Length: 467
Image (cartoon, rainbow, N blue to C red; front, side, top):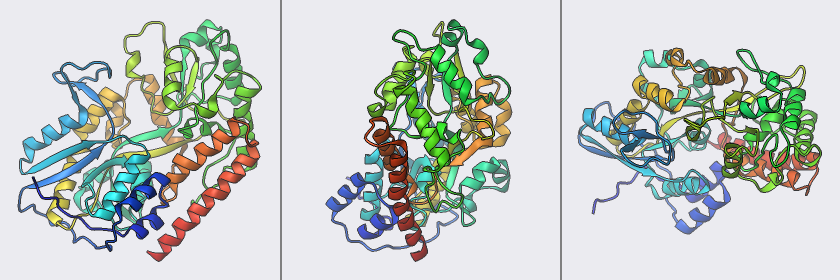
């Protein structure tokens, strides 16, 4: 059995305090019983002097046809290869001395718990798939290795400006950027809209901006029998808080020192949202407990004529070849005088520092390979993932995807402090569940969200100052 190599270790108290950690992660760390003290890894060396094995944690399933490298539906099992498996095989051809061990894990609370526990034990993976908002948890700890020394000037120039800004921390970058991930946008079954006689309400133009009033009219017109105008979920909050943004609300203030979603605009937006189910009866009942998987299913089964979700204008693979289902992508609606917004994350891969500088250097070589132009072009062509490199945007020809790229003009942050993750995955969904179940009024739910979230933010700021 191969001996397990150790990386820099971090104390249990330090991680719990610094990361404003999720309850599940805290429980796992308590079980670890680790008491190691933080150490700082030496800078990675320029050359790799010996064979290295690195570990890459991923969560995305992106199946390709093994022969043509064309995307295939999840149901196809023959002659397929996962995008990241293909990447590992291609990397081995040019770097035979670096072996990549890939581990596929569910991207839920257990993901964060395992990652945090590995830091305590000093067995953290080398490379982790994830957005900048998740990398931001570990930057204050000094646990990540900056990418700047490994990225060529020509590559830095090619990164979309908004991507570079969002992924920069005190002048350093820690994320190898892959794609933009827009936490918003609305899927429409244009076939059902046209059948209801409201094809003229489909948003038009380069941006397809539209009004909140037209949105409600469309939901009402497409609600009939067992079909509803829309379906809402609460476990991924930005699927529906994008409507609050259309009223002028924002989750954070400009310097992310407070949650401000309980503004008058936020309250008005949440009340409008609640009315879709409780007053107008145009949203499928049961929003308080509905998760994304059910929302997807109801929309694809034509039980809902629209579905507020997330993405970049890419038609679901399950609709490939499906007749009588014209898929249409639009930004969230907005009220007069207000600008729509979608929470936007920059997805890529970040590298954890290891005591062995050569091992860290090997991890950077691999991540650099993962985000090379050819790889980003493939993920764009087959999965419609908007690349972080602006030189590739000319390859986007699909009308829905062109609209998706315009979302860079209405980006609002997921948050970059250690507090952003528990706010996104715990506090805001909890607020929505309380409001849709009528346990609290819109104002009460939002005020309680602000109080709980601002405590997390203050804890994160205090830890940043200690660093």
